[in-house]
Image (cartoon, rainbow, N blue to C red):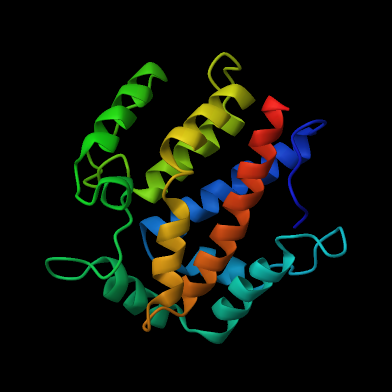
Amino acid sequence: MPAVGFRATGEHEELARAEVYGLLAHLFYAPPDAELYSQLRVAVTEAPVQGAFLERAWGELVAASRRLEAAAVADEYADLFLGVGKPEVFLYASFHLAGSLNAKPLVALRQDLSALGLERPEEVSETEDHIASLCEVMRFLIAGEDLGVSNLGAQQRFFNAHLRGWVEPLCDALEAHPRADFYRALAGFSRDFFAVEAQGLDLLDA
Protein backbone atom coordinates (compact mmCIF):
# COMPACT_ATOMS: atom_id res chain seq x y z
CA MET A 1 0.00 0.00 0.00
CA PRO A 2 1.85 3.10 -1.20
CA ALA A 3 1.96 6.42 0.61
CA VAL A 4 -0.84 8.70 -0.48
CA GLY A 5 -0.12 11.91 -2.36
CA PHE A 6 -2.44 14.82 -3.03
CA ARG A 7 -0.88 16.97 -5.73
CA ALA A 8 -1.46 14.80 -8.78
CA THR A 9 -3.69 12.12 -7.39
CA GLY A 10 -5.58 9.89 -9.73
CA GLU A 11 -8.81 8.05 -9.28
CA HIS A 12 -7.01 4.94 -8.04
CA GLU A 13 -5.24 6.77 -5.21
CA GLU A 14 -8.42 8.48 -4.07
CA LEU A 15 -10.32 5.20 -4.12
CA ALA A 16 -7.57 3.61 -2.03
CA ARG A 17 -7.85 6.38 0.56
CA ALA A 18 -11.61 6.00 0.73
CA GLU A 19 -11.29 2.23 1.10
CA VAL A 20 -8.86 2.57 4.01
CA TYR A 21 -11.22 4.94 5.80
CA GLY A 22 -14.04 2.47 5.18
CA LEU A 23 -11.98 -0.39 6.59
CA LEU A 24 -11.07 1.58 9.71
CA ALA A 25 -14.74 2.48 10.18
CA HIS A 26 -15.72 -1.20 10.03
CA LEU A 27 -13.00 -2.40 12.39
CA PHE A 28 -13.53 0.31 14.99
CA TYR A 29 -17.33 0.09 14.92
CA ALA A 30 -17.57 -3.65 15.57
CA PRO A 31 -15.49 -6.83 15.43
CA PRO A 32 -14.92 -7.94 11.83
CA ASP A 33 -17.52 -10.31 10.45
CA ALA A 34 -16.51 -13.59 8.83
CA GLU A 35 -16.34 -12.18 5.30
CA LEU A 36 -14.22 -9.17 6.20
CA TYR A 37 -11.93 -11.23 8.41
CA SER A 38 -11.35 -13.79 5.68
CA GLN A 39 -10.43 -10.96 3.30
CA LEU A 40 -7.94 -9.55 5.80
CA ARG A 41 -6.28 -12.93 6.19
CA VAL A 42 -5.51 -13.22 2.47
CA ALA A 43 -4.71 -9.56 1.86
CA VAL A 44 -1.55 -8.68 -0.04
CA THR A 45 1.10 -7.25 2.28
CA GLU A 46 3.74 -6.15 -0.22
CA ALA A 47 3.28 -2.58 -1.43
CA PRO A 48 3.48 -1.74 -5.14
CA VAL A 49 6.22 0.75 -4.24
CA GLN A 50 9.15 -0.71 -2.32
CA GLY A 51 9.58 0.78 1.14
CA ALA A 52 6.16 2.44 1.17
CA PHE A 53 5.45 4.00 4.54
CA LEU A 54 2.30 2.01 5.34
CA GLU A 55 3.66 -1.38 4.29
CA ARG A 56 5.07 -2.45 7.66
CA ALA A 57 2.02 -1.48 9.72
CA TRP A 58 -0.35 -3.03 7.17
CA GLY A 59 1.67 -6.25 7.22
CA GLU A 60 1.42 -6.39 11.01
CA LEU A 61 -2.35 -5.97 10.87
CA VAL A 62 -2.69 -8.76 8.30
CA ALA A 63 -0.33 -10.95 10.33
CA ALA A 64 -2.47 -10.43 13.43
CA SER A 65 -5.59 -11.46 11.53
CA ARG A 66 -3.84 -14.63 10.34
CA ARG A 67 -2.60 -15.46 13.83
CA LEU A 68 -5.83 -14.84 15.76
CA GLU A 69 -9.21 -16.48 15.38
CA ALA A 70 -12.17 -14.23 14.70
CA ALA A 71 -13.74 -15.18 18.04
CA ALA A 72 -10.63 -13.96 19.87
CA VAL A 73 -10.83 -10.62 18.07
CA ALA A 74 -14.50 -10.29 19.01
CA ASP A 75 -13.63 -10.97 22.65
CA GLU A 76 -10.84 -8.42 22.49
CA TYR A 77 -13.19 -5.81 21.04
CA ALA A 78 -15.65 -6.41 23.89
CA ASP A 79 -12.90 -6.24 26.52
CA LEU A 80 -11.51 -2.98 25.20
CA PHE A 81 -14.54 -1.02 24.05
CA LEU A 82 -17.71 -2.53 25.52
CA GLY A 83 -16.93 -2.88 29.20
CA VAL A 84 -19.73 -2.55 31.73
CA GLY A 85 -19.72 1.05 32.88
CA LYS A 86 -16.48 2.68 31.75
CA PRO A 87 -14.79 0.99 28.78
CA GLU A 88 -11.06 0.34 28.84
CA VAL A 89 -10.50 2.57 25.79
CA PHE A 90 -12.87 5.31 24.61
CA LEU A 91 -13.46 5.64 20.88
CA TYR A 92 -15.06 9.09 21.11
CA ALA A 93 -13.42 12.39 20.22
CA SER A 94 -15.07 14.29 23.08
CA PHE A 95 -13.44 12.09 25.69
CA HIS A 96 -9.95 12.56 24.30
CA LEU A 97 -10.34 16.26 23.53
CA ALA A 98 -12.44 17.44 26.49
CA GLY A 99 -12.15 14.65 29.07
CA SER A 100 -15.82 13.71 29.00
CA LEU A 101 -18.44 12.38 26.61
CA ASN A 102 -20.99 14.58 24.86
CA ALA A 103 -18.84 17.68 25.32
CA LYS A 104 -18.20 20.77 23.18
CA PRO A 105 -16.32 18.87 20.44
CA LEU A 106 -19.49 16.90 19.73
CA VAL A 107 -21.54 20.09 19.46
CA ALA A 108 -19.07 21.55 16.95
CA LEU A 109 -19.04 18.30 15.01
CA ARG A 110 -22.82 18.22 14.73
CA GLN A 111 -22.80 21.74 13.35
CA ASP A 112 -20.28 20.78 10.69
CA LEU A 113 -22.17 17.61 9.80
CA SER A 114 -25.36 19.61 9.42
CA ALA A 115 -23.57 21.99 7.04
CA LEU A 116 -22.54 18.95 4.99
CA GLY A 117 -26.11 17.66 4.94
CA LEU A 118 -25.25 14.66 7.14
CA GLU A 119 -26.95 13.35 10.24
CA ARG A 120 -26.79 10.25 12.43
CA PRO A 121 -29.21 7.47 11.41
CA GLU A 122 -31.86 6.78 14.04
CA GLU A 123 -30.77 3.17 14.42
CA VAL A 124 -27.20 4.15 15.39
CA SER A 125 -26.77 4.55 19.15
CA GLU A 126 -23.17 5.81 19.11
CA THR A 127 -22.72 9.56 19.00
CA GLU A 128 -21.30 11.16 15.89
CA ASP A 129 -17.82 11.62 17.39
CA HIS A 130 -17.14 7.88 17.43
CA ILE A 131 -13.97 7.20 15.44
CA ALA A 132 -15.89 4.91 13.08
CA SER A 133 -18.39 7.64 12.26
CA LEU A 134 -15.64 10.17 11.59
CA CYS A 135 -13.88 7.74 9.28
CA GLU A 136 -17.14 7.23 7.41
CA VAL A 137 -17.48 10.97 6.93
CA MET A 138 -13.95 11.14 5.54
CA ARG A 139 -14.77 8.30 3.17
CA PHE A 140 -17.81 10.26 2.00
CA LEU A 141 -15.77 13.44 1.52
CA ILE A 142 -13.31 11.50 -0.65
CA ALA A 143 -15.65 9.29 -2.65
CA GLY A 144 -18.88 11.28 -2.76
CA GLU A 145 -20.18 12.31 -6.15
CA ASP A 146 -21.09 15.91 -5.28
CA LEU A 147 -17.82 17.80 -5.78
CA GLY A 148 -19.33 20.81 -4.06
CA VAL A 149 -19.23 18.77 -0.84
CA SER A 150 -16.73 15.98 -1.45
CA ASN A 151 -13.46 17.69 -2.26
CA LEU A 152 -9.95 18.11 -0.86
CA GLY A 153 -10.77 21.38 0.88
CA ALA A 154 -13.65 19.77 2.78
CA GLN A 155 -11.45 16.80 3.64
CA GLN A 156 -8.74 19.06 5.03
CA ARG A 157 -11.16 21.12 7.13
CA PHE A 158 -12.95 18.07 8.55
CA PHE A 159 -9.77 16.12 9.27
CA ASN A 160 -8.12 19.06 11.02
CA ALA A 161 -11.22 19.93 13.04
CA HIS A 162 -12.40 16.48 14.11
CA LEU A 163 -9.65 13.86 13.74
CA ARG A 164 -6.21 15.40 13.88
CA GLY A 165 -6.30 16.48 17.50
CA TRP A 166 -7.05 13.12 19.11
CA VAL A 167 -6.33 10.10 16.90
CA GLU A 168 -2.75 9.82 18.16
CA PRO A 169 -3.77 9.64 21.85
CA LEU A 170 -6.33 7.00 20.89
CA CYS A 171 -3.64 4.95 19.15
CA ASP A 172 -1.33 5.45 22.15
CA ALA A 173 -3.98 4.08 24.50
CA LEU A 174 -4.59 1.03 22.34
CA GLU A 175 -0.93 0.24 21.79
CA ALA A 176 -0.23 0.49 25.53
CA HIS A 177 -3.16 -1.64 26.68
CA PRO A 178 -2.04 -5.07 27.92
CA ARG A 179 -5.08 -6.87 26.47
CA ALA A 180 -4.78 -5.34 23.01
CA ASP A 181 -3.44 -7.64 20.31
CA PHE A 182 -5.34 -7.31 17.04
CA TYR A 183 -6.33 -3.78 18.01
CA ARG A 184 -2.73 -2.92 18.88
CA ALA A 185 -1.88 -3.78 15.28
CA LEU A 186 -4.87 -1.77 14.07
CA ALA A 187 -3.71 1.19 16.16
CA GLY A 188 -0.26 1.02 14.57
CA PHE A 189 -1.71 1.01 11.08
CA SER A 190 -4.18 3.77 11.96
CA ARG A 191 -1.40 5.94 13.39
CA ASP A 192 0.67 5.62 10.22
CA PHE A 193 -2.30 6.16 7.92
CA PHE A 194 -3.47 9.27 9.75
CA ALA A 195 0.10 10.62 9.70
CA VAL A 196 0.17 10.21 5.92
CA GLU A 197 -3.21 11.91 5.69
CA ALA A 198 -2.08 14.84 7.84
CA GLN A 199 1.08 15.30 5.81
CA GLY A 200 -0.76 15.12 2.52
CA LEU A 201 -3.52 17.49 3.54
CA ASP A 202 -0.94 19.96 4.83
CA LEU A 203 0.43 20.16 1.30
CA LEU A 204 -2.77 21.87 0.23
CA ASP A 205 -1.55 24.98 2.05
CA ALA A 206 1.92 24.86 0.50
